[in-house]
Amino acid sequence: MISHVKEFRARMDLTQAQLAEAVGVRRETIVFLEQGKYNPSLRLANLIAKHLNTKIDELFDFSDEV
Image (cartoon, rainbow, N blue to C red; front, side, top):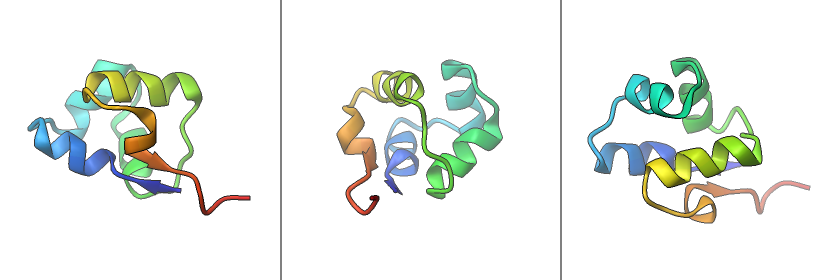
């Protein structure tokens, strides 16, 4: 998975902690998402996308997964 969360988060001038609090997860979850080491649930992906004013498919690219 390729994640663009960091870029969108930076555009909104949010810290990892602020985004995590806004969507109800730990900061470490955001760290792993940004590194592509964690695949979010559909619910979490949707919450993040809404908070960052974008669409799920602009935040995450799952095309390299089987």
